[in-house]
Length: 266
Image (cartoon, rainbow, N blue to C red; front, side, top):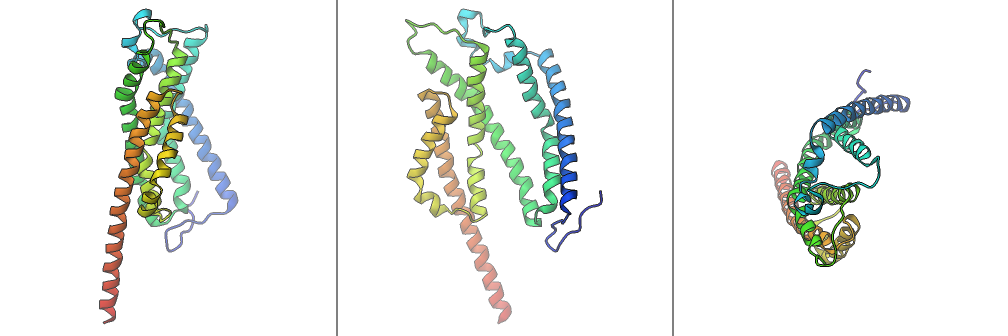
C-alpha cells in the first residue's frame, strides 16, 4: 500500500475504506503475533519453573504445606498454566502489538506529536516495570508478612494457587499502573489540559481520590491500601514539581521568542 499524501505538518490523509482495510490487517497481524507468543509462552511456562519464581514472595510463609501452593480443582494446575502462558504471550508479542498500533496511528499525528510518542512510550514502559519490580520484591512480601501476622495463635492459613495469584496479580499490576501517574499528569500539563496551579489547588481532593482508587485497586485489606496510597501521593507531589518546572521553561521560551520578535521589528 502506497503511503498516504501528507500535509505541511506531516499528517497523512487516507480514504475511510482504506483505513478500515489497514486496520483489519493490523489486527490480523497482532492476533497472529499474540498466538505465536502464547505458544512460546506455554512452552516456557511448561519447561521452566515460572510458578516457582512467581510464588517466591509467599514461599517463606508456606511452611505448613511444604512451600507449595494448594489447589482445590483438578483442572487448577492446567488453567494456571494457560493463564501464565497467555500473560507471557502478551509480553512476548508486545513489541509487535505496539509497532502495529504505532504504524496505524502515525500518519494521523503531527510531527511534534510523533516526536513526543516515542519518549513517552519508553518512559511508560520503564515506569511500569519499576512499579512491578517494587511490588514483587518489596510491597508484596511485606504485605503478606503483615497479613499473615494476625491471629496466628487461633488461625492457620490454607493458601490456594488461585487465591494467591489473584491477590499477587492485582497488587503487582496496580503498582505498575500507579507508577504511570507522573507521566500522565505531566502529559496533561504539556497539552495544557491541567496546570501546576490546578494540581496544587485540588491536592485535598486528590488525597480522597487516592484513598478511593487505592481501596478499589488493591485487595480488601488496609495494609495493601496504605502501601499503595503512599507512593501515589508522592507521585502526585512529584508531578506538581515537574509541572512547575515545565511551565517555567515554557514561559522562558515564550519570553525569549517575544524578545526575538521585538528585536527583529526594531
